[in-house]
Image (cartoon, rainbow, N blue to C red; front, top):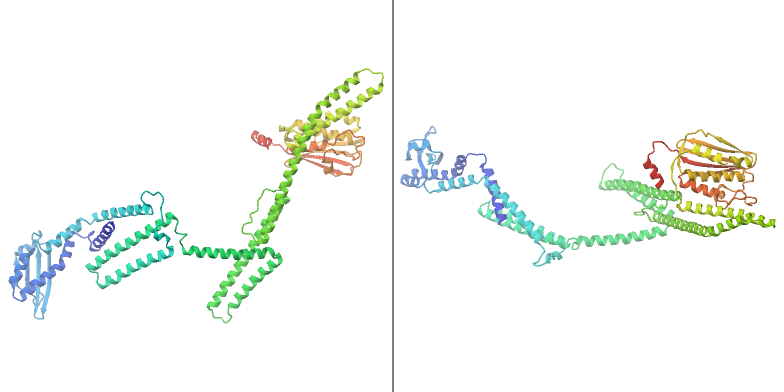
Length: 628
């Protein structure tokens, strides 16, 4: 019903637009509508006068809304002679609708007929009917738009409601497929297209055969209804397919695509296995040979007679494709090689966390990438095991040191008590003195072990603050002035008036200077110079300790940094424990610095490198550094 209403409104709007209802006055529209029937009446009156049957003409005028009518012969000059008349001539002057026509029966009988209609249309004739119809159409010329709009809106709402309810049965909350849902989707589309083609063809063929008459209008309405029914059925079936997900699974194209994909995967696996088992050189040879073959085929298709044919066009297209494919393949290979190169560089720098995307890689590159990932994973596991071992060792050293510390303290105390007691045997005091000295040395060793363990495990507390390097060095030099003099060492300090500052922990820095200066006092050649200097470079500060060793340094700087290693491998005459440099290096590292040892003959040089502290650094930045 809504479809019929919409079609009727749209047809009426088309008729009203073409008939001029929206820009012509009403009387002109009525005049044009009555013209054809008025011409028929004028012919009827002229024929009655020609046959001398005026009574018939008079009766016709009496039955219709004709106010005045006149029929006369056409004169030689084109005028109208006095002939038959009906009605009052004065009414012709006030008539709204008037019509004139010339009716020719033969060469000697040509009549001119005039008809004037009354403005009230009081008689029930065809003129009145036409007038009332046109009056109704004219009054509805704007209302038809509103009716059409509401009809379209109602049709859309009903259409949406049908689509929403499609597939649901009474009392069911889940949609169910219908018989049509199991039909292949392409076949369903083909049947729909065939039905629409049949409706359009039938309308076109039958419409021209009946010359656009009333039968054609009825046929057109039936065809529109059939087309709407087909559209609704197809829409509902499609909605059910969408709801039940029966579109893709019932497509014939799906089976073709699935079959082709399986075939291509099978072929790809065959080529992949062949490529993995084939050496790289043979893969390169086959790739170049394949491109060369395509180039030769393209060149053979291009003629040399100056006549362009389809074969030439194919050859040029194939040549262009080969060039683009060759360039793209070269770029792809270079890109894959670059990714492997970057991964190798990351491994060389110790960056083990980055993952290499091996998707779309050639088999040979993919295999190499997997080997790099295996190496990276092995290094990570090895590092984790090493760190776990170091933590275990540090924890063991710390726990054992604490357990030994208590009885060692008792030994030291009792050795001191023995030395205070008076004894006639002098060797007892000598033994007690040796016992006390060695116990104190063992106590220092335990303390150093605990400090090394804390430094390496990150449990050592560090409070970073801006420190003037010159002040720290001057204080350390003052503390060791007597010991240096006892060992006949001449201390020379350079650039101690520098105002450069570093971010460090003064307490930890003092321990570093204490270890370094202590080693100098133990191992430096007497009657030589010891140098402490501050060197400033852009953005960094270098603290340098230099001295001349009393013994030959027959080891590398890395060996000196190891724990329990001294400057002389024999350890003869040494009272240290070999942990001084290791402790100093760890303390420098946790303060974000770097310690470097250089050996040049008997020259022993230690360089401490720190970043220069700038005054504009904020407290927040200091806290961030401490957290790091």
